[in-house]
Length: 245
Image 1: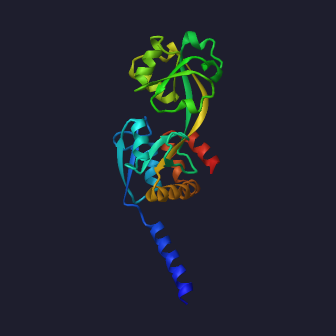
Image 2: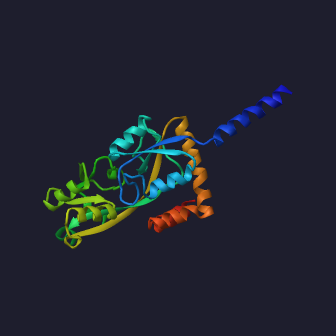
Image 3: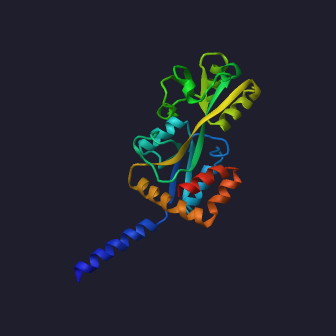
């Protein structure tokens, strides 16, 4: 009798623990327009709130490199906006949260002979520190890491680098902030990369990871996620996520 009851009680206890809401989740992220605003609004934060409904989010906006360090050192539960390989000591879920268009910004003169990713070979290419594009662009180049996109674009304009790489939305926002005309440059997307929420490699992170991969298909099936992505005008990303289910 004892042999049959104890395993049952153990399984029941574990299922109860798994069903408990995690009271507070510490979230770290860089600031990206329409995705992760300082006031806690944005697509990514809305998705995280939906997945972990009932939990309080402790959101901190920090530079991207620091967000990775905080998750790897377990000073935060999850970071947002990671490519595969960005976080070496973290847990990646099955389902991404978004997809980035990796876009090359160049001057009109350079753009006249641009022929895709191969044109980066042997060139000076700038991007923000720890964005890790060198892991995804498979041509030899000299990459220059900068602290912010404005610095990278100014280096491009001054001829100190040949290309600047980031997403088209962030590039266009930076050009507007610098009061530079898009017409003076050329933007060319070269590939799409999946973006993930990444979790600390501990017991809490494992619970959060399991909950994410359970809830995302459920929220797709219910239509809840489609509404969130439509609200922020990210319907293309939703369709890609739906296909990945």
